[in-house]
Length: 111
Image 1 (cartoon, rainbow, N blue to C red):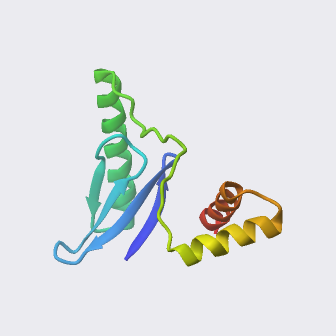
Image 2 (cartoon, one colour; image 1 turned 30 degrees about the vertical axis):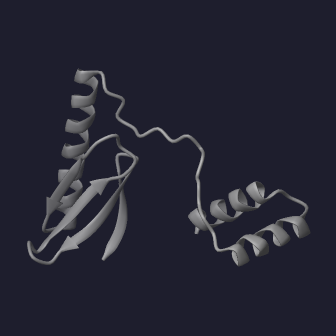
Image 3 (tube, rainbow, N blue to C red; image 1 turned 135 degrees about the vertical axis):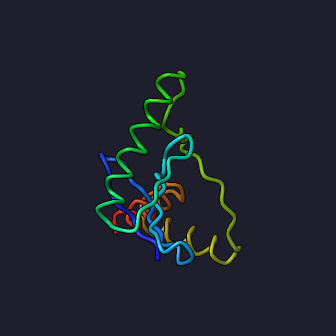
């Protein structure tokens, strides 16, 4: 089971650990680990808030940027047939392959 929840405007990935019989949360997009556990949703929200605040405080105290930096570049490999289909579709739409990929990814993450 994989789900996300928003805690203090930060996204966290939530999984269930069957061995521990607990939920585990981990914030994504941070420049380090900030995880938390609980056996209830309410407890998970409480522990998440505490974990995030501790992480951000530690970053501030140590002069560390708390968020991951992204360059805006993605290198990917495609089968040649798919590359051809993408190129033809982009040409048919009158846009570059890069714009086609940006549009497609933007649609996918909004879903």
